[in-house]
Each structure stands twice: as C-alpha cells, then as structure tokens.
Length: 123
Length: 123
Length: 123
Length: 123
Image (cartoon, rainbow over all chains, first blue to last red; front, side, top):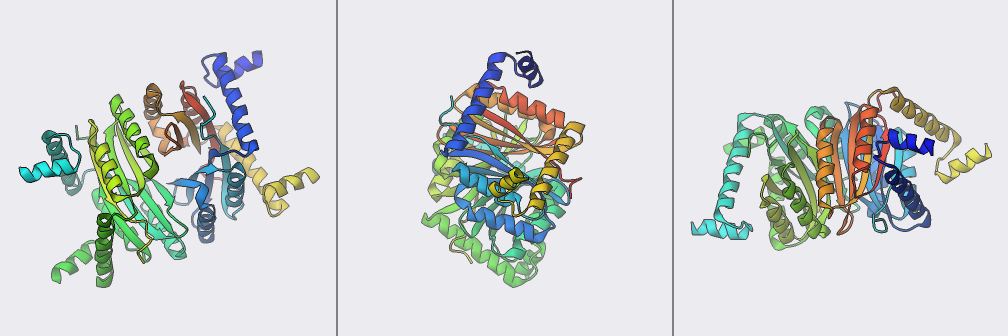
C-alpha cells in the first residue's frame, strides 16, 4: 500500500481511488486487445526521411492497411528526423501487424504501438 | 442589398451584421497577407503516392521550409490518392513560395493555399 | 498572353503548359463541387479557446457531421489562438453546410473552406 | 535464446539481429527519458466530448504547456467518443507532467504517454 501511495504521488493522482480507476481501465483495455474486439490506438515512428526507399515503403504499407488507418500526423523534427503518428481503429491483430511491419522497415529509428480503446465499453 | 441578403441566406448566416463581420475580416486577412506580417494557413495537396519521386520531392521541399511548417495531416483517400494538409505559420511570401513549390511537383493533382491568420490582431 | 506569362513567373511555374494544366484542373474541381459528386477538402478555423461555449459548440457541430469528417489537426498558435484544420470527404453540399455552421459560431475569428478533390477522376 | 526466437517470430522480425537492434534502441530511448535530454513522443487520450468541462480543461492544460506541444490530431470515433493524439517535444519531465495532468482530468477514459525520441543520437 505504501508503494501504491508513492506511485500515486509520482503520477500526480490526487487520491487513491483515481489511481485504482486508472489501473482497472488499463486492465480493461488490455482485455479488449486480447479478445480481438475493435480497438483504437496510435503507431509512433521516428525515421530519417533522407532514406528514400524507406519513405515509399512506409507509405505502401499504410495504403495496404488502408482500412484501419484513420489519418496520420507528420512532424519535421529537424532537417533529418521525422515523427509520424498514425491513428488506427480496427482489429487488434491487424493493428499489431501494421505496427510490426512499419517498425521493421530498414531505417526506422524507433517505433511503438500505443494501445488504447474506442471508448465504447468504458465509463 | 438584395444580393447581399441572398448571400446571407445561402451561407447560413443568421443576420446581416454577421455577414458584414465576415466580409470585414476577410479584408483584414488579405491585408495581413499583403503587408508581410506573420500569418497562418494551410496547404492542401492531392496526389497519387505511387509516383515515388513525387513523395520524396514533397518531403524534401517540406524539410527545406521546415521552419514555417508546424505539422501535416495525411489521409489515405483510397488505394492511390492521398490528401495532405500542411499547417504553416510565418511570412506570407514564404508560405506562397512553399505552396507554389509543392503544387508544381510533377504528379500533384491539386494544390491550394488557404490563407488565414494567427488571430493576433483580430477580435 | 503577356499577362499569363507574368502569372506563370509569379507562381514559380516553370512553363506555360504547367500553368495551363493548373487552370484546367481548377476548373475540373469546381465542376465536381457543383455537380454534387464526392469531394474532399479542408475547413480552416481560427478561434480563441478561452471562449468556452465556442469550443463545445465547435465540437458538437463536428460530431453531428461526424460521417464526413476524417480527422482534424489542432495547433496552439499562442496562449489564446487556435488553428484547427478539419479534413472532410463527402457531399459538396454537406461540406459547405458544415463549413458555414462552424464559421458562424460566435467567437470564430476566421473560417475558410478549401475545396479539393478525392483525386479519382483527375490524372 | 529459444524464448527470444519466439519473440522474433511473434513480432514479424525477419531475423535475430533486427530484434536485437530493436531491444538496444528501446534501451537507448529509456535512457534519454531518464537523463532529461530533449525527447519526442505522443500522448493519446480517449474521452467523451459531451462532458463540457472536460473539453475546456484539456484545452487549458494544453495551452499552459504550449511550448512543448507541436500539434494534435483529433478523431471523432463515434457520436460520443474522441481520440486525441498530442505530439510533444521537450523535456521528459515536462512531457510526463503534461501527460499526467491530462490523464487525471475527470472524464478521460484512457490516457497513455508513448515515449519516443527526437532521433538525434540514434543511427
């Protein structure tokens, strides 16, 4: 319990019940991703846009999985590095597959899949 | 005046003063773009991502003008066509130059520059 | 023709044929918007987020027209002003109606609808 | 090693060296976040936009932390639920603080901070 209180403090939760709520939701969302029901999330990629083939491959993969991609946000971090954030909605398996395909493209410096929810079954 | 009232109706303005306000603002914004003070806006592009050189050129141009691009939004309209919306802030001349450069890339189907404002001198 | 050549120069077109191409496409897109076939575009809004009712109204209107909105991009221009760019796809009439509704919300400093295309019937 | 090979398979890595590379980068990025150097990332939020105070609070918090927010992407998942993805760049501590502040707003259904990198010290 002491450990939990420390966590609460470090995360700027104002009280225990809020922290509990957060843990329970995290659990719920994990279940949604395992059960295969419709989920939402974001894929975050960092890459150097000077690697030409990379840019084209990323775009081809995205158009392949077109149905589940809502839109993507692109930020030019500096002269070389790009931050791309792809909003997805659909099957968890497909989302994972899309994320893995994008991450494994040669030249991608970092890639993560942030698993979230469509919000439908969460109060 | 009759003509103006028709415009009001067609544009779902609820009354004349609102329509006047709109016209005056449009005038103000045009002046901001002519005077060279800092402006904001959006460049909208439609292109076929299968044209490889195009995608790379668009990205190179954007990184060249990096300072004035805030971020861009990318939508996969269908298996071929992309909608890209680039949010810009800076000098009107540079914004126009960036828009013209992007539009003139071979393979861009349509490009427009939507001139807006940073909102600073508008009530 | 001289006037046209000046336009070409000012817009950084490299030659006449490119400028002609641009004019013809502009014509085509205008026709798509008039004929009522599916189009794409962007609505650009500038507003002060401190006007609370405004923010909620803008969101309500967007959820009402949910079907035609793909996603929106939000930029905090300064402590007061927001730039919001809404990507739309659907009927031209609905797009115009959505743009007019958003623009006429009290407190919106500037709003424009940038008419573009889904790219489908354009080479 | 067997366990590692299973991981490789499940994540669609094509070989071991690629999987190692991924692990090492994950380590590097974690160090960047701990050391306090400039990082990039994304905050993903799910909420019901009908809770009026929530929408305004989220916007206020974002304008407070304005300097580190590049732009955000907003998706209307259904008539009630919104997916908002905020691209951030700056100090890891500030990013964590911003994420915690947003997540703890009453009515936010789910919030995550996806830690990534500016790409500068990663090959």
